[in-house]
Amino acid sequence: MIGRGRAPRALVLGFLVALVGSVPVQPAASAGSPGLELRSAQNLSPRLTQLSVYSPALAHDANVRVLTPDGFELGRDHLPVLWLLHGGFGSSADWATVGDAEALTANLPMIVVMPDAGTGGWYTDWLRGTPEGPQRWETFHLDELRPFIEARYQTRTDRESRAIAGLSMGGSGR
Image 1 (cartoon, rainbow, N blue to C red):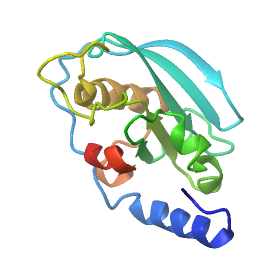
Image 2: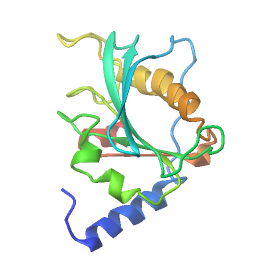
Image 3: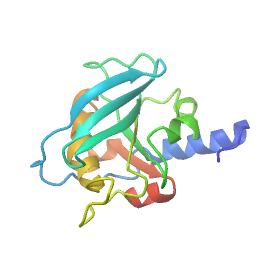
């Protein structure tokens, strides 16, 4: 858990800033997958939006939280992206509610994406489904969600403009 004082927050913030551009995301697999369907977008704060999307790969809805910088304007701002992946039995809300991502990125010119990955999907495609349905988290994140975020938020797509960090199980998603 992140400490409450300024020193731990400054450390995390410094880490996040250093991370952007230093850890590239692997290119997506072939674009043969159908796209995501946006079900709803709910503003949770002036910077934080929760998206609900239907994923053909997962065959169900998934949540994604997105932080934009103050004053962000589509069409004008083409920003880098930081992907924050939650741990096992977590959710897309964890980085915002427990990790204080909104405060830590308040003055940074970047889009922060915090997607769902199931309770134990390990950010991979499983050979067999489970009672929860197909476990195709790699396909969801790389082939569906990444192009969706790039198009919706008009983000930069060069290698140097993508970074990813994960907590526990989320570390496997890098």
